[in-house]
Image (tube, rainbow, N blue to C red; front, side, top):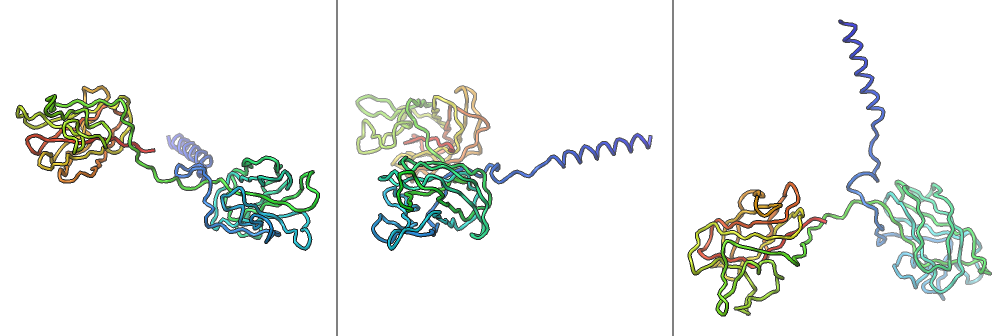
Length: 342
């Protein structure tokens, strides 16, 4: 029995060892908080093997980082042309994982360089060769060159190696230089869903044509809409006041398709005396079976600014139910919004 137990233990240790040896740490570019995007150039600096100080627009190396395709870096020709190869050295000021270098040719010339080399460095002294590439100086749109993935790069060096066949001298030029790389994702933004086609119904509403109309449907119209029977104020829903309806009151919004809202936005009526102070939010996929989304909420009827309330439905919902629990006898609501994360 001891031998069997020992064999089982050895097998278990072997399996654990195999799993451990196969496990690899995720590369930075595989983590979920990174996205590929054009890197910000606002703090970058650049130097060049030579630049033309006068006579060109602008002629300086910095022109390739200014976002203007009509300004160019131009190698020196005053007092004699600098021979090939020519180089640009960009300091991005911090290390990044870069995936692509983008170049834009001079817009009014088919000359320039056709072959170039890209290198990367952490310190600006020791460089790693990313390869040699072919550039088309006659193409005025941006050209992309993949170097993916190059880690821990702060400095990028572009060396122009060969000139175009139409170039008689040894000068060269370039309009724009940008880099695509991996960086932390921009914080997720909550965006209001479009309400076109939405329908709202309520436990009761004010509907007296020719006198006063405050329908449930008005909570899903545009926020700027005016009341059809009181043009000086925003449109709003109001519980029927001809017959005293006790709490709770409710209003159901059919968003027509299911989504995962992150916030619900509500606007009070302009008259705080016709407001409510406590309510709940529920969600549904079919408009019949509702699940409450969180605890009961407090509402301030004295402010007309939008009030946002967090919701976290477990699955996409199509219907949202606002149930009014406490407040004045004839409560109102001016507007309803649903927000999702992008």
